[in-house]
Image (tube, rainbow, N blue to C red):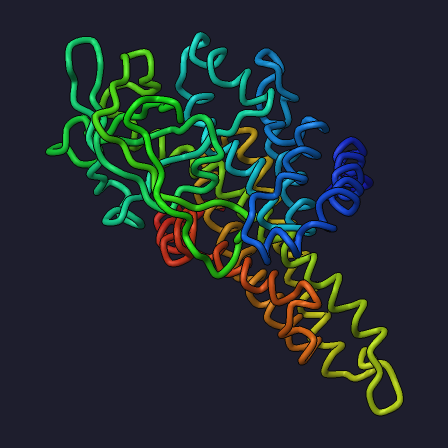
Length: 383
């Protein structure tokens, strides 16, 4: 059996990685500190990503996008997150918000919303509510039939890029008594009468990505805004997360790699007791463990991306596994990076304290890591 190319990315993917890495270093990283410090949207990153066709690269070519596959999107998110985690939410959220439309929408609906997305609009995902986080089926936002239209009332909590995005996939209860089988998916536009946004959340990390409540007050939606069959929205939401959790793993992977980059360079330059601290075995062991865990996360995440592209039967396990493992790794690696830098790691002169704060969210959103372990246990792979 030939092993010359096994577990090696084809050259076109490596070329993509190099291209995104160069863009991120030149046009995103220089603004990362200020984006976090000022809790402002990373407009420079958005502009650079949009010019390069990377802000929504997953959009199929027939609707004006790049048609990037799941692994390509992973590489984009990873390399952007390596420089600035907040900026990596631009391509990640655009994919999350629009994937239900790609999976279930008609060609007319795709043309209506995917083409503007490829041209620079944003697309967010509205599932979580104040009382419906891990228990996503408990949504209280209600869409009630009224003639040929639906009247939408309620609110969604912790919505990434809320206010910036133009389009929102909203999961609403159309038959509250039916639980998970009574939820339907709609596309809501920011300009729709009755749509409003809450105050910006003050967050530990990812400060550059606006997180706000989205409110719906008697928002009238014609039936052509419905992108799932009535009552099939929850299944569509869960299918979407099976694919997009892999981009969260990529995000965590990028954060971890960025922290290792800083820590390894610092360890070579920082001298104590007359020699670089890299020469001390305690530091070497920490760096070795960091690199080992990142390498393992990368292999698992890339394997899950390939399974996402093929829509393999064991995708749910692998999506949960890579998201859980990579985000736990990111938290461990960034914490160790702060430790290696010592006092410098604890202040904002170096980016590792920001990376540590950012890493924490990857263990929480798109399903906490406790939920991921439940999903893994319920979907154990058969070998």
